[in-house]
Image (tube, rainbow, N blue to C red; front, side, top):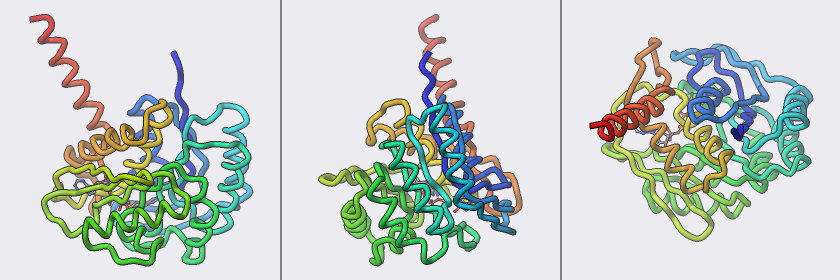
Amino acid sequence: MTIYKALTIAGSDSGGGAGIQADLKTFQELKVFGMSAITAVTAQNTLGVQGVYPLPAKAVIQQIESVGADLGVDALKTGMLYSAEIIEAVAGSIQSFGWENVVVDPVMIAKGGASLLQNEAVHALIDHLLPLTKVVTPNIPEAEVLTGMSIRTLEDQQEAAERLAAYGAKYVVIKGGHSEASDEVVDVLYDGRTFSYYTGYRVDTPHTHGTGCTFAAAITAELAKGNSVPDAVQTAKKFIQAAIEDTLGIGGGHGPTNHWAYGQRLAKQQSRVTRGERE
Ligand SMILES: Nc1ncnc2c1ncn2[C@@H]1O[C@H](COP(=O)(O)OP(=O)(O)OP(=O)(O)O)[C@@H](O)[C@H]1O
Ligand SMILES: Cc1ncc(COP(=O)(O)O)c(N)n1
């Protein structure tokens, strides 16, 4: 049996809905062995972020090197990177290992408003990380910061994707969770030439903490297994749609998504097929 391996380089969310915790749960559900390099520890729950404690860049590099030198990495994702110093260190490690399946979720601000990336680190992300990126997955506010344009329409999402591709990312997904459309959510994928659209119905729920982390982690897991970027995005969209729909309803604020939901649906489908075959 081949074991596919994915690394997440991100912050820890004590509440378990976003960050490293969301990434590892998603890798596990998609049958990929998950590994982590923690950039910062946050004290966090569904009500907000109570504390942010970044690790020294040296500690981040050491974790990446420990994993890379021994276990190997089929794909990796980055989440909360916090500072320019950590971004440059991470970019250096990616380059020295020659890793290509790199998914960058440019995490900037938590749902409750806490800053997870220092303002001056935005340029480091553009200059050092995007040129090494296979897939970058900003939400609309992050894409606005990275491109300097305002995004209101689907055409704006497309233009922002073109601008981000010009920074060096091979594929760009502008997620539509923050768009003003009320009935559906459209994620736009740009491969440098053409656009594809991944549409789901908009679930009316406050429980969307960690949707971006989970979506990018699912893309990473699928790339680790050798799937194409469009196929990986398709699976990630189904994974996050199920995780939002089958809500857990825990915590007093923006609750986490349900990382079991996609697997439970697949198992149900499978048992229907098996029963049909027997009858
Ligand atoms: N209410 C919703 N209903 C259905 N899908 C949604 C909803 N909100 C977000 N999504 C989907 O979840 C994924 C993440 O989108 P979003 O734009 O919310 O990212 P994000 O803001 O980075 O997430 P977060 O910051 O919460 O981690 C996308 O695939 C998006 O289409
Ligand atoms: C450690 C960490 N990483 C990422 C997020 C973004 O998730 P959200 O925007 O849903 O709060 C977060 N809150 N915490």
